Image (cartoon, rainbow, N blue to C red):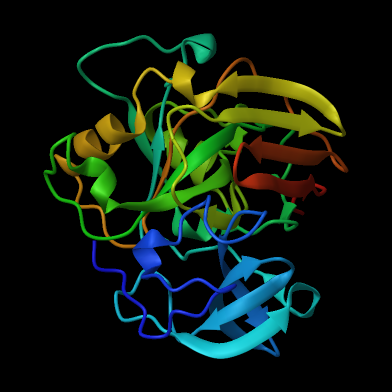
Length: 280
């Protein structure tokens, strides 16, 4: 991979970007963020409560540090990427009705469904059947078309957290799935990206108002990360910044106005969103 920085100053590290992984540098993990700072969209690396600003998106091989260091409390988190494609994996955990097989069930959420950490989920007008689905999300580093399973993870930048919000009243069959899965605010994503984790063995859980409602490990996924990327790329060209919601576990329940939904992924942190009143 070619992610090189000409300025290698980050907490005393002297290393190319591809080597800035989860276990390097600080007592806490390096977090790749997209933020709003003084009204401008910026990219950076969050560590020890400070954002080291980059001159462009960290997915660009020519990215450099600007030398600016901004306290975290002075920025507003945005979604870590702005994906062109949002691919979802259906029934990827046996506890959620999945089973192994040659084919993998796929669907697409719309980029307009994506919202950041702490944003509000707004159910469609009249809906009372909007469910949470906590998931690990893969973020693509570069173009992947018809890649092998052995090479697939070379195309992944890292992972973040997603909530595949689903309206079960609308449903996910036939021509309903684009509304049931892709409505506005149905794709919470964030709060940041972490590299260098063992994607196929992370704790994943969801809480609603502090009560655990989903709990699993990504090792229990039927189709692991490399197979998902390889399989999808046989049909759909994945581009830099595209994301893959890798499936949810267990049973899910409808959320209600005022609920606080927190999805935790080991090594990354917690994605938190509140449910608002249905649209009028």
